[in-house]
Length: 218
Image (tube, rainbow, N blue to C red; front, side, top):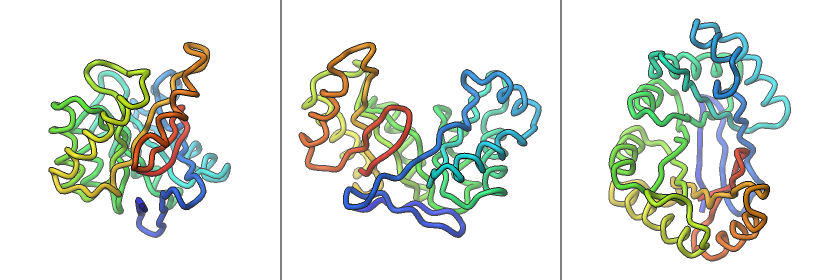
């Protein structure tokens, strides 16, 4: 199963039959005070520099997050994506928990984006998935729900199936849902990695290992 993402001039295919696709995630103001301050002021020099550096280091896609407190996130996310697109042609992974920001970014993006992400809470799926469908995007499905993150592999698979089924209800093909089986930090739970490895073959669909560096297919 192939998930195809596009920018204006480049195509990336995420598939279990192909090598991993590396998604750079440095363009995120969380925990980066200087970047957050610059983005709040509308200065995109560091965003552009980070985009260039990640692509030069091998990233085939770039995750863009504009979650700066007390700003107009829809406008800032659009500005950040445009800044990235000025200096690189790799496809974009749009990263926001704000539905208005997601929609604004998807409307402005020239290509087929990846949305990061949707979890299995009914309200989240019913808000995000119609927007994903509207703009012909793909989406990352996180294998957790309102109960949190289960440490039982089969339960993670069942949660993933709920996301895929709800996406299908909204007309999104399974190929456009990339499942993140979730890898918790080994420091927090020594069994975390093993649980993730057990989760992946349990499902009949492809999954993407997660650790805050990305990714594989869905």
